Length: 290
Image 1 (cartoon, helix red, strand yellow):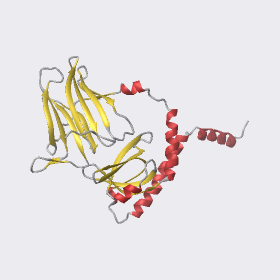
Image 2 (cartoon, helix red, strand yellow):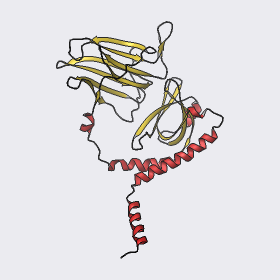
Image 3 (cartoon, rainbow, N blue to C red):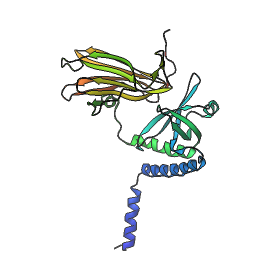
């Protein structure tokens, strides 16, 4: 019989071996971000640090629109198993030119009142590159959904508990249609946070929030509520086989998303289905009619 201490050591060793490589990597990420975050906080003592945000990420795109420069960054979301994309405006052109696509960086940025992101400081981060690539390579070990399963993903949209305050929003379009076939007219409305000038012309920023609402006498359904960077939202209403459809197209420098909404009579909800939403998109050209 093994001594008690030896037996305990053996058990602890086996338990330690059960820790996945991915879990260890996540722990390393947290430690690194804490250390680097502390460094940047000390470095920016004279600034308003409450407005600064700090991330490490991979620059997957560089875009230029007129005199404005942007980068698209891929980083870890709130859940370390999820990857999210952030679009940042780079106000310093020399800084934008020095940034290399497909490279890893440590970044600080601020969030403006209109929710747009502005890059402040950036430097290469090879340590994050090693951890990021090792975790991403491990992802295929998890059970992947087939392309057919992804296409069949639906999102149910139920009536909102509180109606959206539209007093500070700009109405862009509105139409009255009986979507649910109850004999009563519903209203579909599209709003944005961008404002009009004294001549009624829209004052578009690099990005603004857009909203698409369905209202009847008692309920409000929020079909779209999102920030659109360097793009816009369009919608169409049509019938197919006597069923009403609402189709939306969200465009942007890194987005081209087509979604279809129908009404579920049994559940009393709209059902959203994303038809086209490619990943790692970089729009090269958009035709215009003058």
